[in-house]
Image (cartoon, rainbow, N blue to C red):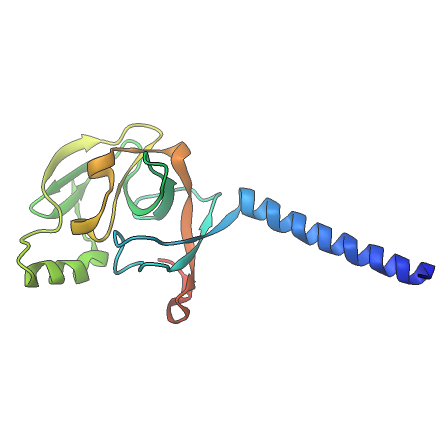
Length: 177
């Protein structure tokens, strides 16, 4: 192999190694692709949807996050309460810091529940304050979701990232709102 070919090969190897390093660092510290499992966020997310998480986002009310649950599985849920928030559910209506909150992402599930004899999606619970360094999360499919009602508050350190982008199915590719 002549010197010019060797230099070309070395340059390509440098590019490949640098690209691999960028991908690995990005995945470890910035972004991570994950698959959705289960029905707890239907119809917002369906089984086997592919999403991308941002690991550097500031988590706020109603963001969707993936976290490691106490059973060591990754769960995807909607953040209802952030540290210091007062949360209450009364007559199937969410109250956040004393104000009634519309939850338009529940409309399809509310319609299904009424058609199938369920008077409400979410049983009442009295007001509580979300502790520091914790989140209160609920699934959008409230009749079929293991969430903070069962497993308690989610520690900030258990959060893997915020759902930012949907990769599949193809007809739903785009930024998650």
